[in-house]
Amino acid sequence: MLRRLTLEGFRNFADIATFDLAPHSLLLGQNGSGKTTVLEAIRLLSVGKSFRTSRLEEAISFNRPYFRLETTAKAPPKFVASFFYGYPHQETALIERRLTMNGKEKLYLNWLGTLPTVVFVPDDVGIVLGTPEARRRFLDGALWQVDRAYRQHSLELSRILKERAALLFMVKLNRAAISELHPWNELLERQSTAMRAKRQELVEFIGGWLEDRHTRAKVRLEYVVAKNTVEHYIEQEVRLGQNLYGPQRDELTISVEERVSRRYASRGQARSIAVLLRLAEAAFIERTVEAAPIILLDDMLSELDAQNAKTLFELLPNSAQVLATSLTANPTIKGYQVINLGDA
Image (tube, rainbow, N blue to C red; front, top):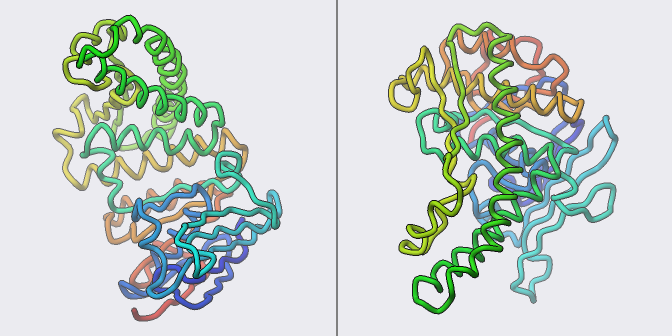
């Protein structure tokens, strides 16, 4: 559980701001007051990525050379973690990115899972209504936090796809023989098999979790994989100069009452399904690392009706630390420490 969070030079917190956190905290304030920024900081410390931008430079306060985030955790285990991003010296134009735990530098690849988090944001409807890429990101986001082998498979897959795409282009230009693809095909199939097995395990867990909760929406998940082998696509791959085989092409089908949600779900239904999926993600992480993740709820009460909001808070893991944001106090949230950020 996080006890304290410090932000320096991070978005609208140009000066040092420190927050003492309780097991359940509610951040109140108007839009632009920094509520979401606090959650973003915790997520950044957790996984090294922001849920608001892919360009961390945008998170540095105006006229500041860097931002620094630091948190103190009670247990388990006790630690002080700090994340630095920006220009450490005025005379250098090189961006530095550094994570430390108890003063010792760590790679995020080894850190992941130490401070697991699950983020609920309004844009989560994209998991249900959006592209297959959004649903693959949902699966990968959970697996990256808890499965070191999966992270390695994913990194290796990225390297293979990059090298293989370059070779496909060379074959297309008749500058390489098609037989040169064979070793890459074997590597691609090996990594694909490993990643698909992990994703399938997660999908089955989520399906079982949903059934156990007897939720009103009969949500069904199916992980869809192309049945053809890599050789089946080679002719078309050479013609297009791109990879057409692999887990980067798979789909997660989400259905309610046998109807595909992406096509038929209303936005309200999509929000409800997305909340259930995030709750299942939290349960999966807790089962895998044997510790509840930190739950970050960004303005979810404004997105859900009263019944779905009640369901959300009833299904949150009892052992999880929860940080929620809201414009105003809400009777659904009871017994929470209030952190008032005031106006923008």
